[in-house]
Length: 231
Length: 104
Image 1 (cartoon, rainbow over the protein chains, first blue to last red):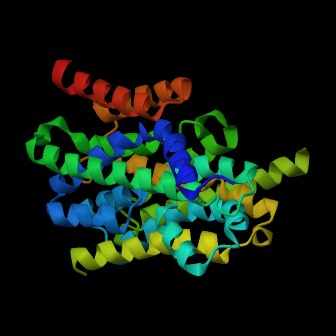
Image 2 (cartoon, one colour):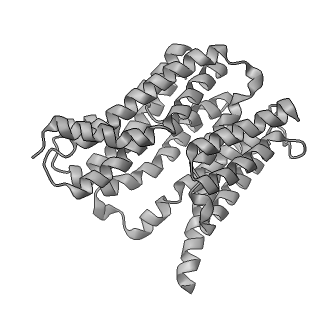
Image 3 (cartoon, rainbow over the protein chains, first blue to last red):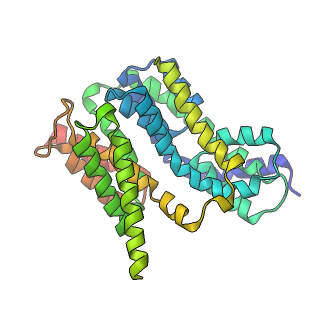
């Protein structure tokens, strides 16, 4: 059996190639957070406490639009609900772990670490294989915290007229690049976008994100059902 | 709510989703149908951020005509579809936007 440290290192090396897209995310987050008016300490606090790119950028976007706290928190919850999918996959590999390890690993279970470690966990059966996830997660952590710091420093120097807030929709657009190739996803994207845009000024408490997401999911349920019927 | 309370609650809900994945959710709890629906969550939620951020201007009004953000986002989308690269999508969008507002 490989040593814990070797597996930890393998986790680091496996995750490094997919860290490249994380760098602009962290920078954009840091810059915008300062731009919106959060202090450097609060900005760092977000990256340390939340440690989730999409969650943090949704927080910024809704906060700057004047959404209520309850709406911001539930929107962050909704954004995270996509992670529930991982649970079904990863939990079976980690079911023998002590609770204390589950508590620690949960903090590090970000998209990129999950993606590479899931492949490793599927192929290996050694009892210490979860060190791979710890290595990948720790790497993501270091990259995320250091790019946040860099973004905070840059945020003070970047002029507002560059319009960097436009990077928010672009970062989310970038997360959908694979979905644009699938017809049902494209329809869901259009429905959700239209509901959010039309509801932007009319749905109270800026809850348009939640309403649009539900409309999108409902569309997905309906369309997948119809397609199965005629298949 | 103070900024710190907001940050802590958002952190808590993010952490709890991750913890529940490891400690609470078992494979049997999700049938294929629920998995299929969950796979649509990004497509259902991200456009709700993307569209208003592009179409609604700083004064809360729709701006369809003469809106460089819409053009830049469409360029970024096509670059994203063909390159499948997160970085290429973000930078092509920003570059087109800056070109439209500073050069054109």
